Image (cartoon, rainbow, N blue to C red; front, side, top):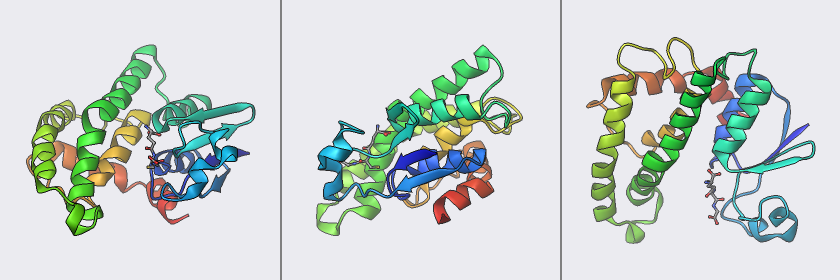
Length: 203
Ligand SMILES: N[C@@H](CCC(=O)N[C@@H](CS)C(=O)NCC(=O)O)C(=O)O
């Protein structure tokens, strides 16, 4: 059986959402990123970076949330339509997955941490305003990409949507207003309304 390391309220949510989409059986080892278990030699043998998530599937040990999701979708997702059925579609799924990690994840996490998560005395409002500015360009790119289509690759929800929406799900706890990006906002709501997303967060 698949074994996923990481608590749900972490980047482990990304593969958890996908495994629910695919109806896969898995065992979750709920390691907390704030705890000592990350530095346990037994866990470092799984992920030498000492971070979550990590996946074990048979002989394969894999870390990095996007790599895990691209692997799971490719291996188990063809029949579900989550994995694109053309090389061009695969390339676009890779593009959007790399894009969200390099253009969006870091500034969005900074907004979330410095506006909601860190204790008041550790918050830096300058980081919030600077990173809200940084996010304008990628959010406009995503909004334009969604013009005239329901999902990033066209009519159907794919791993590209899941990977991007899982990162953008931080917009809600960050209380980030998206009304300037109406297509992005509607698409994000569509993606997050999926039963598998809810199941992953309540399992
Ligand atoms: N790029 C990695 C980042 C993993 C990561 O930073 N995970 C956090 C939890 S969401 C963590 O383990 N933090 C513990 C630490 O940095 O010490 C991925 O996407 O899997």
